[in-house]
Image 1 (tube, rainbow, N blue to C red):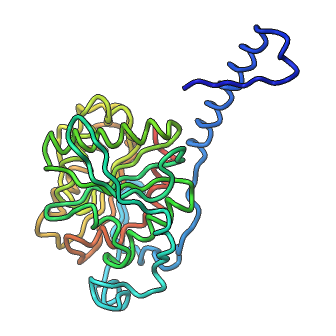
Image 2 (cartoon, rainbow, N blue to C red; image 1 turned 90 degrees about the vertical axis):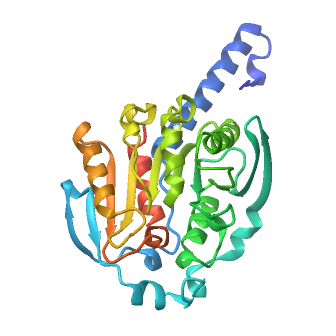
Length: 308
């Protein structure tokens, strides 16, 4: 990055020109750092997306069991259950800053949807879909109780960027494609904190990104939503940096049992004192419940306060 500042009062001295430019550049970088440290997402329909009552908690508040109910949280919330949420939960005006794009990378072409500022973003959030999904899942305004629409509006309303990409697989090639996408947009927004949310099998990519030298040293947080665990995380660059991790899991998830994910969460906490990890268990919830119910604003604000 090159800074060119030429105050008129210093125009007569080349040394002063260089000093002024250097100081201005330093001031700009410090302002970016301060912005990242103090950023807190402004509300968007918080009252509608507030968590239901807590049934219990533990691990010094890091573990919470919530009172999820299908009749209330799906049937009453949706106009057409699981297909179209009631209108008050969404604001589709955000589509004005939504683009369907292609990025050509050494790992292959990456189709993705971008919502918000593609340059100079204050925060970047990616959602990586699970088996059978696509980039379209993460930008659907009406499914999952309107929760993706809320995330889109939170990013657009806070000077951020939201990305929902396609990728070839859940292995190394897919991870390389997502890493290239992160590298591209991080370069355009050098002051942004970067958070990766992974639904279901997409969690395989979350752990692979944490383990890579490039993304493991760059990402600021991971969100595992109805997803899997990977003990290789303990030797990853992201773990060594104490990148915050959020787990959302339904107690009736038959794809990835909640007991396994709870055990992994507690392993993280035990291996590193006071490691920034949180677990929200949606009691009676199923595999897709965390995608529908996770409080994006509350979770991301917590992560922003803990990010390295």
